[in-house]
Length: 206
Image (cartoon, rainbow, N blue to C red):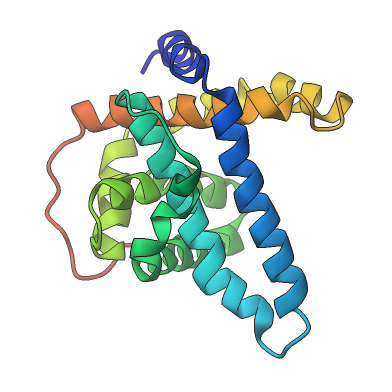
C-alpha cells in the first residue's frame, strides 16, 4: 500500500468535483444537526439518531467515494444512498464500536489496533448490501492483517491537514475532507486486491 500513490489517485478523483462533494457533506451535516436538535427534545431521541441517521449517512459517504474511485460522478441524492441498508449499517457500526470499546478497556493501544483492524467493515458493507455485520468485521480483520501500521501512518499523514482546517476555521475542510475520504477509499481498494479468502466464524473473535 503506497501512500503517495493513494493520495495522488485521490487528488485526481476529486478534481473538479469538490463542489458536489461539499453539497453532499453539507446536506448530511445539516440533516444530522437538525435531527439531533429536534429529537433530543423527546425521550430516546438521540438513540434514534444513533441507530438510523448516523450509520446510514456514514455508509452513504463511503459509497460516494467508492463510486468516485470507480469513475462515477456523485450527485446530491447520493447523500441518502446508505438508507437502503440502514439496519445493516447500524449493526456494523454498533458491533465495531462495541468490540473496539471492549479492547480499549484493556488499554489504549489494543483499542487503536482493533479500530484499525475493523476500519474496512463499512467499505465491505458498501459493496455488499445486506452482508451480515460479523462477516464484514471478519473480512476487515483479514484484509488489514499486516497492514494496520500502514493505515496508522496513513492517518498520521493527515495531521498537518487537520491543523490547516483548524487554522482556517474549517474552510480548508471543503477540500481536505474529500481528499481524506478518497484516499481511504483507495486504501480499501488496494487492500481488497490482496486480501486473502476468509472462512466466516459464527462470532467475532475478540
